[in-house]
Image: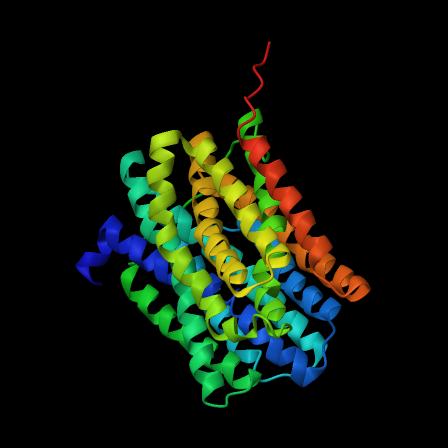
Length: 385
């Protein structure tokens, strides 16, 4: 209804707010709330990891459904519906206490977040020219870091005021609901309809296949630290003072990082920029368990936040470049690969932590996954003969 919202820039702003709500808040607010849930509910680390994996399982299935022939009609309609489910499932976490209910709600939230990523990215990235697409992606993908920062501030304020985990979930759901109203206004209603791609269900070029595998390894490689970083900090007297700010640092580093990595990709190419980002992120993950001091934790948060959304954006942009026709299927395949890595990461880390009492082994496994991902994206594509 607002004329500004017809422009690609305002669509990108709407996409930013959508990602902030569904991913920055809906998915990642679990990290700063988790330590309070563990203390109040007596959750084991295995259970905490499994609960995170339930969210990522929903994310994986949501990505696969988003690519299916059953999902027809307006992209905007699916986006608004998914944002509604995300806000409701986030807020409802503060109204229940049973493990089964937690699993269902986190699964639903993950399912919705995949729809939001796929459909908001398709709306924002498919309209403009290739040159404009990169600029708008900077705005669009900054939403995740912005949402992390906003939710970190919200959680810190409420904890300082004596809030417990239930009120944190309820407040996060309310914040997501406000974002939903803004997205509803910024992304206009259209008669646009789309049909599934008629291209194959799997990527055909070796470069795209390597990218898909690397994206899955990235999902595994970043998510262990992204899930348990605040828990790691809270458990140590040495770095516990950083707990109120460590997740905020991740968000503050993530929001502007898209612009930096987009600039670097123009200078050195998407593949090399991705490889460099994987390597830097590996260093950040290693710092969380090998450099266990306040400077080490700050470095971890900064390097993790400064790379994971850059990788997410560059990966999807590169996949869009390598795809043909309707981008939704390729974006969904990338999201599914990413989701599979995310499912395995927290469950593996929680189980190993309960066996060993440390996140050292799972974190080093994550470092290895990121190094393999870096190698894959710079491997020359095979030429058919």
